[in-house]
Image (tube, rainbow, N blue to C red; front, side, top):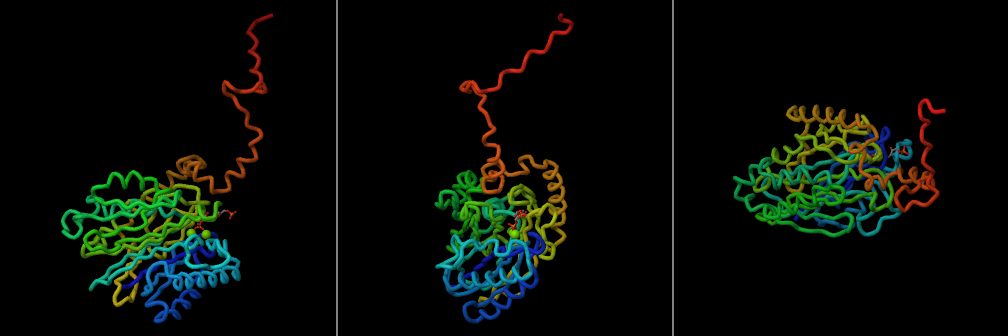
Length: 383
Ligand code: 13P
Ligand code: 13P
Ligand code: MG
Ligand code: MG
């Protein structure tokens, strides 16, 4: 059994929150190289915006202490580089002082899945910046449940029975497994609210294996304060009873709106880009998604293909720029700015608190301290 682990963290931005410094990537790659053949079967370093991701294969299973500890140590090293270079938000996502057990609740995000390697094992690794884990809900629904996106659901006998969706309620820390297609409407009831309900895993009923896994941590819910966005990762296995590569990429031809741009406080369109363009600058956005394609073989990742480096996504990018103009024109108004519940985890409540004493009731129960009505205007010509 092979395990694919994608573990990521923002350990410092170059410049601001726009990118990872090449020296951080070098340090991480060196660490991964030295673990290859020992702890890891294979490993690579990738990034999207200011988030550094370790893409690793190994044989130790999901949630394994040694693998999580290794990632934690790498992130400590890249934080050190960020501090030395004075990069922005050095160690931003490392919420804990010390590692214990596994990375759950410690800040870094991770998507992991166990797989029995098929004779040909195409896997897509998606990395996003300036958004939140629920940003994968819409594309996962389209890939694994929408026949308008994925004709394989109709015509491939191995897909026709559908998939199980495991959904996390991040507020209540509980989970629910829904059986698609029969429980499609129940699924949409929840995952249409991506700030709270997040698809954690999709399982093929026919193959009995995990087809997709996402990172589901919400940093603000862990820390109870604003600490940057969660910038999630996702792995999707493709072909032979799972969505074709093109079916898994197709949802990103629509630049859907996600939460997370600028101070983690704004909705903006998701823009699919080549790795070289994964550096959100305008209004710290628009949020980016990169897709690295791997043909996993004997546990080796091989050379990644840059799946959105394709002119067929030009229209999605152009549309994302138009939608960004539209959102930006709202300035500080919703729905560009996130709703108040989400703004709880920003610095906004501290500013609002300054005016607490100046608010006065005005309803029927209002005390007599309510200011008297203004005097009636003088009648023209009187006196
Ligand atoms: P600071 O400049 O105070 O960090 O806030 C802006 C920002 O970039 C939020 O992460
Ligand atoms: P990151 O979560 O990518 O660090 O972005 C934080 C932010 O506030 C950007 O405006
Ligand atoms: Mg950052
Ligand atoms: Mg980021």
